[in-house]
Length: 467
Length: 81
Image (cartoon, rainbow over all chains, first blue to last red; front, side, top):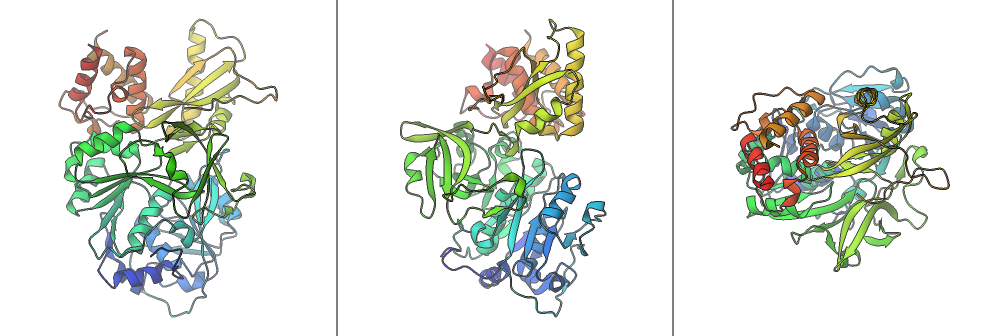
């Protein structure tokens, strides 16, 4: 049975069916809650009926509270905007404006001048109270996810429960499956795991940004987690931990980055009992396919033989059309999410070798640092602010640890000296500027001074197509 | 070039740039207790590739991941031979 054939009106309705057969829980370490208690009460102070038909920003620190708000508000709110914990302050006014936010749900105080249009603030402290007695209307709630945009302003990507759950088989797990994920559930990869757990009546352990890898693995092991997902970079960190063998999953899922042969082999050696899959999904295109043969890349037959997902390679990049794709961006500046024919261009470039496709980079030069996207333009804009810089090109450098690193080639206004002290000072100044303005994964790991950069006849920088 | 000395120099350099506090770099120190995150390790491995002309993590799809600082040094000493 899949969501698409038999779509429940809301996530809470779907969970009510699933919890009948077992008693799943969600846990963030400090707090564990039974789903049936969550369904019976309210984590929003019994005020969810006030939010009927509203556009609600869910901006909590705690993932468990965010999950509870999603469960309580799906079908009640007109729109839910899921805010990841980082970089909220800077873009809050833009998000509130674009998503026409009327209410904010949070576990912290949000007092920002950019929230003037917001009429309701609901503070959640993680306590379950009796539900309100209002009868909220029924909405097909929009689920809005944030993903990084070229200029730094996040793109607001609109999904529905049906599009998000399109790849999930809703067979009940009968309490046998316990999920966990290294992802934050406010990101597409993490939200997939939350929905997988909720819709199949499985329990879920949340990760915690403050927790060490060893601490998380100990918790995962102690709860007997059977299914766990993360990026290849997350898994490399696990394999560098003396606690790697505290867990013994049946199923390991990798996504968010290219899974190379090395990480697939290592996981198979350390967890011989586990089925290991790597999945291709993007926030915009949705889940496209899983690869289960233990090899990097994917067989070319996947393009024709994935039920419900149409895929094609045009101008070397993968394009996807399916009921799992998002419908649109809420902020118009990012242009259309789909082409006129309904396909999402992932801009991921594929190379076909011996009947198998391999991901080799992005046409738009986007750099994937451990599953986090970096748009080169955003970094170049910061570097180019330095008065001694004429122009710069930010590109990817392959990393065996974290997928890719950010590298910058910089042309100075005056020709670089032979490694003189002046140039070294400029390099330090540029790095300092980047560290002040950008999160650490966007700061170039290397800056090269070059005499010129490739510029097309149009005057635009020519970006290297491949990683 | 002395492999260990170069690794120690680069670890200290990366830690300083990324504002991480390093404990003493003993052979028994677990890498994940060194205060360096995945980004730091990625930068370190990239710099060491510039120093030694090789990346042991990319060179083998089957060699086990190092867990301690001693394992990390051994990995480079082994492939640098």
